[in-house]
Image (cartoon, rainbow, N blue to C red; front, top):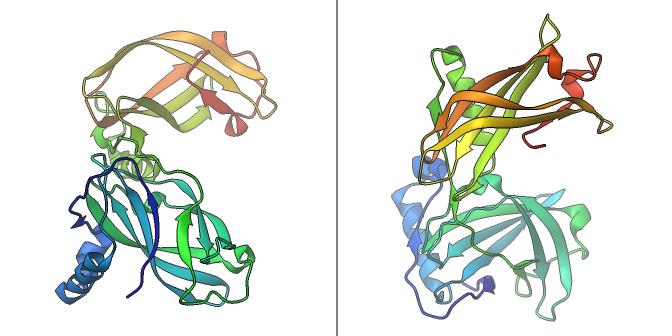
Length: 276
């Protein structure tokens, strides 16, 4: 087997790579299939310490797109994950045969010193040749890939007894969010709505990527309309807002009429910023 390889070198020392399957593959892949994957991985060039590597195994013409089977190997001491990843297919002369930015959020977390099979799909519109020769191609990261220590937060729950009937909905919302960097704290809006008394209710999720409990005593909030005009703003005192390490929690907050500048704004088309 000939592999098509692109490697980013961070350090130089040979490492041993273990197979790490996605949750879906763990449930459906037979032991025979796993043995075949291990054989293919063992045939790949050795991986040096610090390398993040993508190896192309084969391409398949699906009509409107090209399927590319790859292995992604993580030779660094940090777990990695991907979001938007620009990829290239090139030939031996370095000519670009295809170029496309892939949405790879579903790849998940790849632990340190592990490898995982994956498939990417190039739309035919992004191919610059009629045919990719089986013996003259390799796949590459278009830009340098650096390892970032990320955290997958688990849903912790709710303050008090609110919203428990929506726990499944909030968990799905959490799972669709991109992972956050270690030591970051992130706030994502789940829903905003206008109340009968013209106040604005905001339901939001706080994710804590730190190793310590995060406690908030004040919360700056700005709401802007489609034109960037301020609809409401203020720095608000909050109580009992605390999130445990590597956890996510749902809160809701109501902005009263006193802090609303434009009461006629369509709140469904507004954006919420947790900063001034």
